[in-house]
Image (cartoon, rainbow, N blue to C red; front, side, top):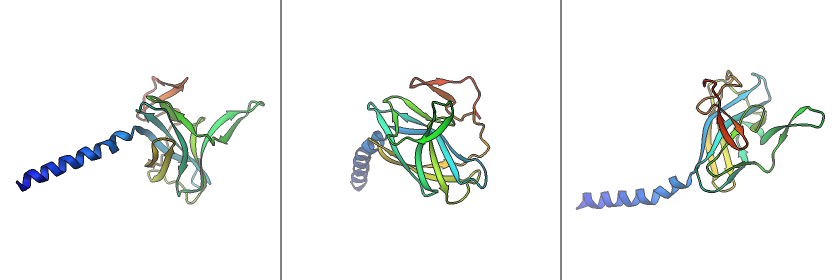
Length: 171
C-alpha cells in the first residue's frame, strides 16, 4: 500500500511539473562568446533564438556580471555608408514558430567594460530577459577561434524572418 501511495504522489508531482517545462517554448542554440583579443575591453555573444510557441515574443534585455554594461546591439549603415554599432533598446522580436539569429555583423549581445579577459574554452553566465517567456539563464562558451562565417548546429542566414540554411559545412 505504501508503494502505491508513493507511485501516486510521484505521478501527481510529475503532472504538476509538466506545465513548467511546456511553458519554456524559447530555446537557445549554437551560442558562443568572443572578444577581439586577450586585452580587449569589450566582447560579444551570438546565438540562435528559437520560439517554439504560438505567440510572438521579444528579447528585451540581457544581464551578466562579466562586464560593467551589457546591451542588445546591432549594426546599421549610416547615410555615409559606414557601418555603425548601436544599442537596440526595443529588443529583438522572435516570431511564433520562428528563429532570430544573433550573429556577427548583425544583432548581438554586447559586453562593455569586461571585468576580466574572455578565455578560450571558458564559459560565461548570461540571463536573457524575454517579454513573455521571462528570464532564462544560460552558460555561453567562449570561443576565440571560431570562423566568423562558420557556425555550429544551425549554420544559416536570416532572410526576411525565415531561416535559410547554407550549404557551408559547420565547424
